[in-house]
Length: 307
Image 1 (cartoon, rainbow, N blue to C red):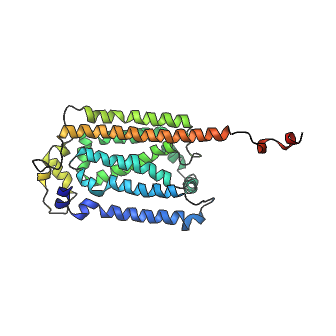
Image 2 (cartoon, helix red, strand yellow):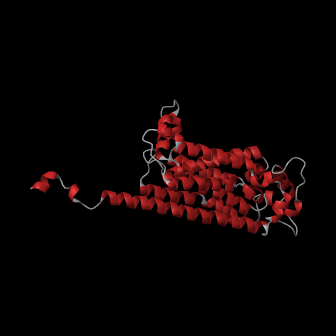
Image 3 (cartoon, rainbow, N blue to C red):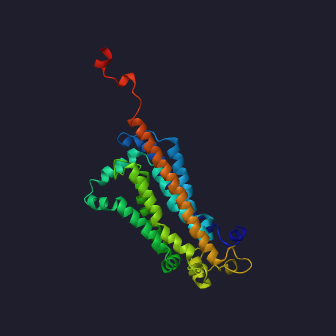
């Protein structure tokens, strides 16, 4: 970490523009759940845990799209993969859990009146969601695509937004923050989570079991230099001594780093999906208890009580 601090500027390390964006987003969220709440039908006070979820969402997204991890992810694909875990497997579900139902319902009510709402409903379905996210994720990790995107910041940012939207779509059907829209039964939700875990496996297996390091961003100084140049102010000299040699930032050989990245993604995905299954199962049990609750005297018809 000290080598990063001494070789990169504050802007390159801490991504202040992302911090400003997240602060603005937090202010909008605060206004929404407080001052603007009265403008929404059947709006209720937001629970403390939802506010905590939103705070954790901003932290996770910052770690995924900015922070020193962004620079470090140019030296080790394991750290780059850690960013992806934070951005698409931690931040997105926290964001959905933080959103009040009355706000989500208002959005869908508005969208249902839009002229092309049927096209939106075609996109907003579980089949599209599962293939879109896992397809984009797998495509991103094709070596040629990965190296191209790392050297094209505009395309890389566009692809990130696409991954975020597709992740939002996928997580919607797993968490189901508004069950009345695009509903799946609890059993189908659990099967859906299992299927998502299976579909991401080939990309992880490709990374883990490749016979050699696949990504030139982490093996070719010229490609790495092109990717890193966009992280530094114009005219800055690239710290090639951190890329290779005795002072290299990476403490792992390239192929081992790649294997660790694939293992990390698969393990973290399994843990997070496992927690989500527990969340769905808990909701399922709660609903079953509500439906099969104990009979009380208030449940007995008045006529029977007087006979």
